[in-house]
Length: 329
Ligand code: UT7
Image (tube, rainbow, N blue to C red; front, side, top):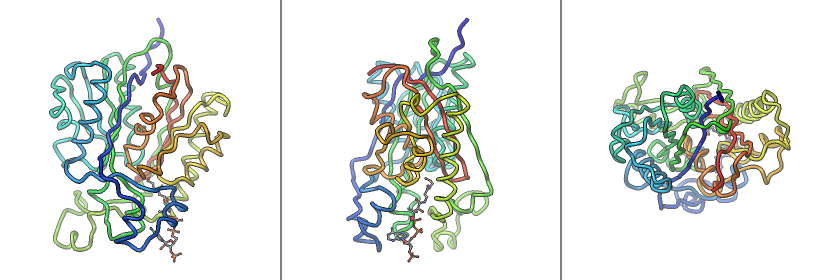
């Protein structure tokens, strides 16, 4: 009997309409289009004016189910990777299920910052491989504008809002998620953190006045760890699966900084035409970046393509997933 693997059988994204350009940002913080573009590769990002993470996720899910002709009642499980849940509880997954009418599904949220989507993808794959679940939605969504300090030029230029979702289904052709290497190092937590609002530092007037509910990042330190670890883990998953640079069809890198993406592709020996890059138009949407890339490139992907997804983020968390694409669009 052939082994059951978990294949991505559909992908969809959602981006809010409002565009915040580098020029817009330069009107209220001391920055420039030139600085942002050369240091990060970002030109503009999307901002959700009204609504929550669940609204973006629900729109992406509705689009996916309509495209695939699937009834919401067929979905078994919904995993939402996010650092910007609607509330600490109930989970955003609960809310998305309600908004879409997925009343037969159970679901939960998963926090792994920018690595959230690969953590959730690997988790969702296990439910399919075990044979207990037939249709699993893995969502990466963040409304970063809700936790970004638009007075802090070192962070506000980087992040944007967006959502992406993939459908996982059983596959008997050895396509889908082949392998994953996932890592974490909590000693890096101080370098990229939302300090207040959790049990360690509940909300007080002081935490609000200190702007401690916003993302704080020591950019240079995070950059150094990200460059090294994202490149290393991507090379490691290739070696572990006997993949040469010729064998890899696509790198789907977390979109945090173009320089980190370039370093990862170089370490893997990949030419630029094999690397998905949309950071210029969406910025860093945290858990949203990887499914949004897959959505943007879906029509170019072919059945059997070897794809490496790779990410690094707060925690620290990082890792890579090797998957074989399961369909032609
Ligand atoms: O996705 C989660 C993981 N996060 C990441 O991977 C982010 C990793 N870090 C980075 O991408 C980069 O470190 C940043 C884009 C955040 C910053 O770029 P950098 O090249 O590391 O700049 P820097 O922090 O070394 O700052 C260089 C200079 C500083 O000025 P001085 O001290 O040299 O006078 C900063 O104050 O650039 C200044 N600066 C800015 N200038 C104009 C910092 N932010 C800005 C800005 N506009 N927005």
